[in-house]
Amino acid sequence: MTTKKNKLPLTEEQIITILNKSHSIITTQTETIIDEILLNTKGREIIINEIIQHYILNNNNTQIIDGLIYQKILETNDKQTIEKLIQNLPNGAINLKRFTHINYQTLQDLLINKKFEEADKLTQKCLCEIVETKTNNKKSWLYFTDIQFLPEEDLFILDLLWKIYSKGKFGFSVQKKIWINNNKKWDKLWDKICWIKKGIMKRYPQEFMWTIDAPEGHLPLFNQLRGTQSLYYLFNKIEW
Image 1 (tube, rainbow, N blue to C red):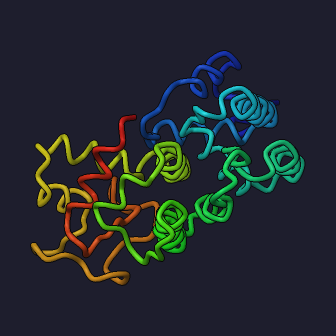
Image 2 (image 1 turned 30 degrees about the vertical axis):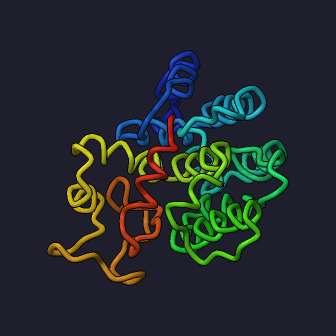
């Protein structure tokens, strides 16, 4: 007799439809469905085959759900499925081999494992390194005049890494969307993403949240204590 736990909750066609849907953020309902599918051997097989195909065919358009599934498979006790995942996607849901000037793999590893505080620090370091390669000037943080030196492709990948390993909650483009939806008012943005407490900017790092439970747009930080000009120029560079 088939138990409820071992029964595939959806048909293969329904599962593939969910996996190919363009999710801007993963809802609790969608995550619950993924969890139920992963309880089933056939479900795990369908899911892993599908994200491998996404990796092969759509590397420039990796879906947010792919990152979530990658993380969840690693958290299972299914050795066979984990081995298949690592064999086909050894470094994560995004292939970063085309980036030779900056190594983003360590950042991908940190985000896969939800080490958001370390990932935030590394993101800032990567942004500074990009500008350093263009200007030959050592950077500890970025001025608004430095934003012009950030290639769109690098910003896109950094943003995508944050989004797909946070269920779509974190990323520069997520912050920009919240900013626009609040009439480009900085004080409203700070409030929405919880960068302020009683009207005062929070102290770094102890007053910020470093888990997936943080509010939408809370991470990554960007020149958090250095005014709005750099972030304004960064938002204007993001067109996706």
